[in-house]
Amino acid sequence: MNVLYINYPSWIHPEIFPGVPFLGLLRWYGMMYLFAFGFAYIALKKQFKEGALNSPDKSTSEDDLISFIATGIIFLLLGARIFSTLIYDTSGKYLQKPWLIFWPFDASGRWTGLQGMSYHGGAIGGTFGMWVWCKMRKRPYLKWTDAMCTAIPLGYTFGRIGNFLNGELYGRITKMPWGMVFPDAERFSSSIEWVKNFAADIGMEILPNTLVNLPRHPSQLYESFFEGIVLFAILWFLRKKKPFDGFLSGLYLAGYGVFRFALEYFRMPDSDLGFRISSDPAASISQNTSLLNISTGQILCFLMILAGSGIIIGAGIASKLKKQKA
Image 1 (spheres, rainbow, N blue to C red):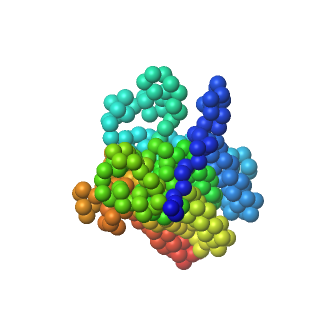
Image 2 (cartoon, rainbow, N blue to C red; image 1 turned 45 degrees about the vertical axis):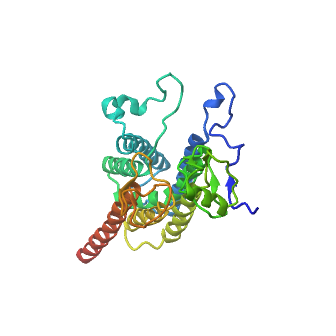
Image 3 (cartoon, rainbow, N blue to C red; image 1 turned 90 degrees about the vertical axis):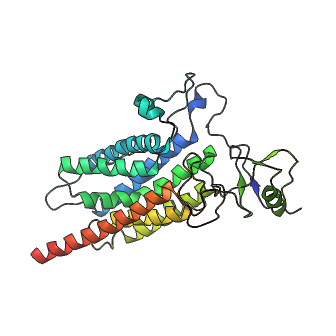
């Protein structure tokens, strides 16, 4: 029988040193954050050496660079965590006990880390942090955010790889030969007719009266490639060709929004949120049955597209008016 799916590698664990005392607390996801910030800094420093952050009235040093990116990272992490717990959590426990937002232990006292980070919350927090820094240091905000937005996507690649190593944020079920069976994914009863047919089509043997774990899109890797590598390549290529300050910032927001909106059709929505807009209230979130089934992430991405387009238009008009006055 021709098997058209891949089992998630059993040797992959969320912990870097599984089972080792103390070292077992180190997780790949956290390590990927370090890689992400490291590569973002390298890309930002490259632009600094190219003169992208020069101002006619102020000199820029590497200390400024470190201070800028550190401020952005701190606000990014705050925004990512707060947004995740208040927007994506439906239990209400964080509203009742907000101190748990940054509490890294479960009810039994076991170390869990800060599980749950929202990209959109991180984007809002990081944007605000960079604005605060530029305001305090009296630097041109759009010039600095252009450089930062050019540096961010490659770092984002590592974040999604971290999600893959955690076996989380997987996609919807698929018959594609690269579909992957993730250990913690939702299972379906083998007594359901469509489950039987689905399993037969991909060469999966199932037993009667059992729960079946069907293969899913490795959507973390899709996002890592398109929202990370591809978007970075586009912005990096255009960094010396931008027509005005703010262009790359707007293009990043709009570009990420477009890629993520499309890829959300392959990614599994949060089970407790489901579809925010749906042509069929009974539609399963595990399957992509209609392009009219819209997730929370897609709504936020649509707002990003509007915001990015607005920045490009607004910054373009402001740049043209400035040239006319000069």
